[in-house]
Image (cartoon, rainbow, N blue to C red; front, side, top):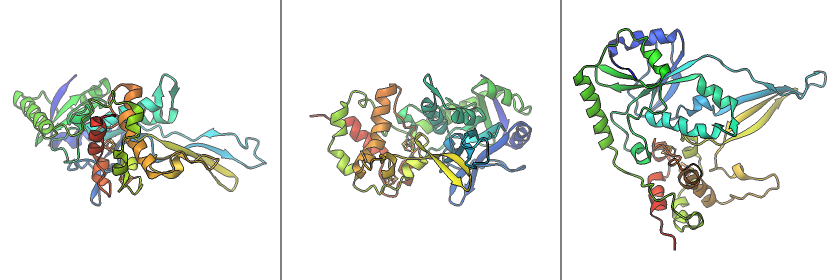
Length: 348
Ligand code: SF4
Ligand code: SF4
C-alpha cells in the first residue's frame, strides 16, 4: 500500500477536501479529558491527546441507540407494529484513532457480525465509519498493547495510519479506501529515506517503552473450574465498589440491554450499554440472581476477557491494552495484575 509524506501545514487543506465527502470527527479537549467529537467547519483534530476517555466504540454502538419506534394508539391501524428507526446515512471520517482502539473494533465485531448473525445496527455504524489512525509516539504508563498482540503503530483495523514526525506526517494507506483518501492529498509526496528511518526509530522506541506487562501464554491451558474457584478472587474483588467505570470505558465490552420507553401513545425501543459489574445485569424475572455477590461480578469481567473469550475463539484475549480501566478505576484495580495472577495460577 502507498506511503506518503504530508507536511503538517498542508494537513488542513487535505481535510478540507475530505470534508466534502465526510462528516469529520476527531479528538477534542473536554475539561481535563479528550473525547471524539464532530469537528466544526474550520476545526482541526487536537492531536495533543494520549488517549480519549471514551473509545470510538461509542460511534459504532452508541451508549443509547434507538432501534424501533411504535404506536400504541388504538386508532392507529399500525398500532403495535415495530418500525425501524431512521438511519443516519452520512459517511463519517474519524481522525486520530489509536491502534488499540481500531483493534478493539475488530475484536468486538466478532459479537455482532459472525456466521450465525449479522447485527444491522452495528454493521451500519461500522460501515459508515472510516478510520484514520494516529500511532502512539509516547504511550501512557497505563498502556500495554504489546502484551496483548497489538502495538503502538499496529495498522490492523485502520484505513490510514499517521505517524507524527514533527513537522510532517508519514501517511500510510492500509486499505483500498485509505488509498483513495490519500490520493486526495495532492500536496503529499514520496517520503525521504530519512523520514522512513525516523518513523522506524519512533516505532521501535515506542515499543521499547512497552515491555511485557501482562503474561497471557498460560491462560488457554488453565483448567476452567479451578481458575473460577481460585482463592485470589477474594483479594481482587475486595476494594471494588462496582461503579462500572471499567466496563463503561472499555472498548471491548459489548454487552447491552433492550428496553421499551413509552410516552403517551408513542414508544421507542432502545438498546443501551449494560455491564456485568451491575447486579441488575443478571437479575432473573423470578428474582433469582446468579451473580448476586460482588465477587461473582468482578470475576465474570476478568474471566470473560481473559479466559472464556480465549477458550471460545482461540484468538488472544478480549483486551487490547488501552489502559482505560487501569487509569480510571477509582480504587486502582489493575487488569495487568489480575491477568498475571490468572496466568500464573497453579491448580492444586
Ligand atoms: S472501575 Fe474499579 S471499582 Fe469500578 S467497577 Fe471497575 S474494578 Fe470495580
Ligand atoms: S480491559 Fe481495560 S485495558 Fe483492556 S481493553 Fe478494556 S479498558 Fe482497555
